[in-house]
Amino acid sequence: MSPRPSPDSRSVQRAVFFVATLSSFLGPFMGSSVNVALPSMGRDLAMTAILLGWVNMAYLLAGAAFAIPFGRLGDIYGRKKIFVAGVAVFSLASVSVATAGTAVAVILSRVVQGFGAAMIFSTGMAILISVFPANQRGRVLGINVAAVYLGLSSGPFVGGIITQHLGWRFLFWLNLPIGLVLLLVALIMMKGDFAEDQEARFDFVGALLMGPALVATMYGFSQLPSARGFGLVGVGVALLAGFALHELRTPEPVIDVRLFRQNTVFALSSLAALINYAATFAVAFLLSLYLQKVRHLSPQEAGLVLVSQPIVQAVLSPLAGRLSDRVESRIVATVGMGVVLVGLILLNFVGLDTSLPYVLGCLGLLGVGFALFSSPNTNAIMGSVERPIYGVASAVVSTMRQVGMTVSMGIVMMVFAAHLGQAEISSRNLGAFVATMRTVFTVCAVLCFAGIFASLARGKARDEATSGGM
Image 1 (cartoon, rainbow, N blue to C red):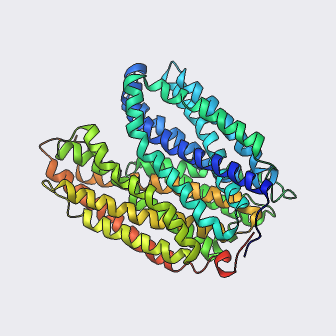
Image 2: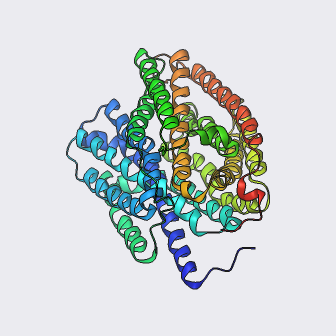
Image 3: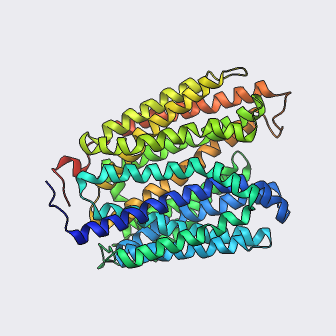
């Protein structure tokens, strides 16, 4: 049994829980609400479709490229310092976007916002894990994941209302008061720096290699099957190989790549997370097109259908997290991956005249599966490493999510290019679009099937193998 926490430690736990939960809500809310605001942003700033694509791509690439280096910096110099700096950078960058007068200013500000997000998400979960005992980890992670899904589900609806009545700039202004609240609570109530590896040195060379490697690989994958896409992926893979060789030779790496070889739980849980995001992220994108182009629903009606999945996830994630405190995480997560596989298989039967209740049922099933998978899998990752590298482990979770989302959209773009070419989706090619959609769901189902074996093969996490406690 873990010792009963003191009143002071309970107040720190409450502060950390509040800050981590609110910041976990903020990022997904901003990402999903900005998608709704893009058309208005494009009209105001005369942005082309390519530039609008960069509004999101710049944020995703910056977040993925710098999450692990910032996580390691937090382990060494203090996670609270990096987290607070991240909130400040994110808030100021949001103000910069809100006041931007050109497309270039918006995109550059989104890059800076991605830096801030990387600092926040690479340390927030690590701080959360470090103040709660192992036997409560699943519960707090479940609520944390629920906040993510609540942000995803409320973003399009709230963002649409704000954009329509107050303008797209207000979406970014909204981050300023939220950031100030986070800063005040973190500075006043979160005692300590949460630095677990202060004697280590930061590997600047490894960080400089890792960022460009991830950016080239992710952006290149999003550009496939073009020659430029293949070239960028090749450059990225070469840089990743150089990064891995450097990390093996340096005594204090940004991330010990041997961890992936020697820690089966960490390696396969991370792989399972990447596969899960790669297999599921494109679903909402495809079904949004299907509901509006094939079923002729309005954007608002399509949004109401699609919101069913994240709502189910938000409701069930805390319960799944509690379950992973009692039942081995890999069992709960593997069951979740299996449920996701069933949902993807059922989506292969969606056609030109499929009923909306059937689509809702598939989305609900995916929501159940993702809720069962996500927080237990994160619990397994964080429970498989020692406290000094909680920041790196937290950053790996964030990076797997970003890379998985990029892979998912890359699969969509490749299949679209092969089946539809450059043609717009119209009444003349709806049958071809549905066939293309089914092909993507088949590929995603195959990925998910492979993910089940990765999830099962991982073994027991360190904290699950012992009686736990911090």
